[in-house]
Length: 634
Image (cartoon, rainbow, N blue to C red; front, side, top):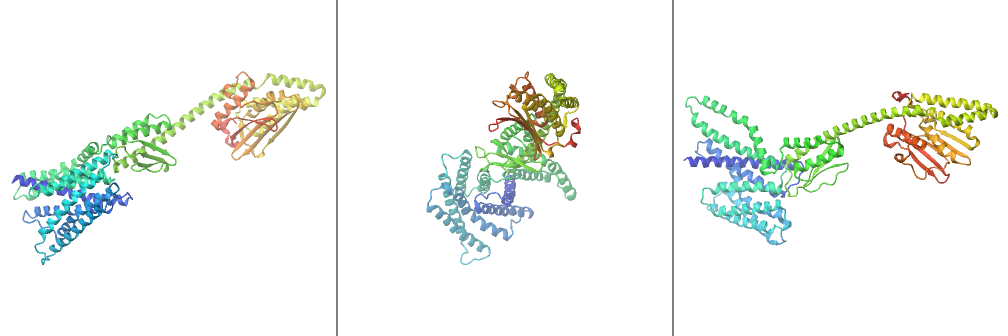
């Protein structure tokens, strides 16, 4: 008696689990179809899943009817019986056609495959129709046909099983991946057990073994063949449901034995309900344990969701730059998903078969794509892999934003330190260069020579010399000046040099009116002009021509100093210029100031005009309005 009760409970649990699993599988397949995912196996696999669901619901309803009627009847509603009789007959041709559809590309072209499938359908459809008519009470002339119809179904099932086994064997290839070989191996085992079960019909264990074979066939197909995106959810929920039904069945079997109160049924039911509270509270913990076991033992996942997020965050913490962060993220993703990972910026590569990808967004805008290449062993990526990659991609985007903020902060701090250092050095250099002895001696000698010959010119030169020194003194307190002020200073400086060189020096100053109000570093044009005089004009025996120009170009100011001196054979390298030479000191000072204020984009450019045989030294800087320079020492 106890053995029969145990067998009954085992079959009840099995059919409840199977009915839930197939109904849930039909729902997940429909959900995947709504998401636009590819449909594996076409309509054949969807129809076969639906047929399995109908049959297991029929079996479950029979067990429940038996329980609620206290063992008096196993009646199932007529609609359920009809659906079971019709659909059960169609399982065989559907299964055989599924094997053919999925392996058709690997089979040799032959008419026998289509002939076998059509024969199976040709037998199954009339059998299903006749058995359905018998259920409606049609007796004549087929009153004794039911047994023959069952025998015909068994013969078709056996032949279809053998044909399916042949298809599986012939579809194998020497270069098949381990993943595919495992799937075909499972199919061969299941088909062989199915044929053995069809030959042994007298044993009481035939039916439960057959139900287990069907469940195993579906699990193998969903994981290895269909690669249902939600297979991990299906497996975990199905296993939890099986455990929950088993625990509840055992619970009621034990509790009902000790809590039978003939006159206190309400109290007994209340106590029974209270005893379920620990089981209900333990369900989240039980699901977590089931989920972890399925991930590690079955799906081959080495990290849980929390573990993967922790490992990923720890890998990114030590990043020192954006490129280092990118490399660490790819390495960590590779170890988590057990496959090569790439994070593409800009236009990502075309999606490959079997790969997993998700967009990386920063501030709501698309920044790139995180891609996990298809695994070498062909193990598919499932729904929880997609969800995990989404979490990690969001974490990477946050880390990238933080890294960029750190880089900007470090750059700003470094720039400020450079500015402070350069400002201190510039003050010392300015104080040291405010009165250039050579320039002063040359200017005084020129004035002394002009006093007797051209007193008016001598007086004008003295005033210009005073203006030059006045500007130099003011410059020690001002790092930035208006372009017009710098040009006036350069003009005064060149007038003194013209008094020195006489008719040998010709000067042309061309300044765009729109650029005069914008700010530039003080004495930067004068330094280039002085360098052109000393190392260009002074070495020319004939007339020396120097041109200073400043023009606005969009949002920038282009400044150039041109002279007809010998110039440079090649553009000078500032790092190799001798610091002791005045040319090296002046050019290096200008270059350092440009880089400090404007970064590497603002640099000196050296050109040699072969047609006019002139040397042009120029630079371009962003326009800075005069009203915006209050913090620059104006």
